[in-house]
Amino acid sequence: MSTTYVHPQIPPPAVSIDPNAPGTIIRIALAIEALLNITFGTYILLAPTSFLELLVSYPTSINPLSATLVQFLAAIIFANTIPLLLAIPNTRRGIEMRVPTYYVLGFSEVGLITLFAYLALAKDEEDVGLTAKALVNLAGNLVSPLVWRIFVLSKKPEWFGRYRNDVKRA
Picture 1 (cartoon, one colour):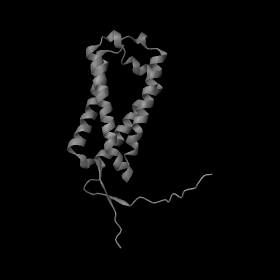
Picture 2 (cartoon, one colour):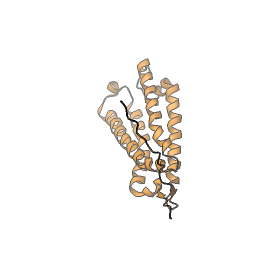
Picture 3 (cartoon, one colour):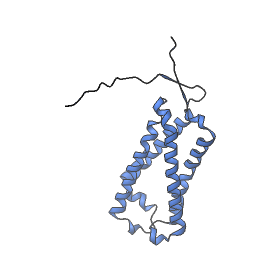
Picture 4 (cartoon, helix red, strand yellow):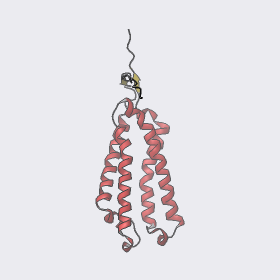
């Protein structure tokens, strides 16, 4: 025997955007980053071998497995772009997603920068299969977004935007 429970639909309280912190700067940054992610992800999804040729020590080391793994990377890039897109709207949910999204992406960048630096400095190109220059460039491409995230999170939190609950007065 099952019991049916009534789940009333209670709409969330209405909100208005705080004019002192509309979140415009971060919304633009999120849109630019999402566009770059989609562009780069599409490139490596459709032309993985071309991308790998920019990175590997020996073009003969490119094989179907490495090309497939690059396409998996494209899927991960697309998946990481979803929170960026969801944080763009100036809604309660969009505003509330911005800070956690920046933290997650920032910690991901720290991990990748550390890994790329380790592989470039501590490993031989023969063991890694990627040139040290390529690894340094990969790490370098992540430094600017990481510095941006740290700056905004620590010095300009108002750029994420704020909302105010609209209270109905009787």
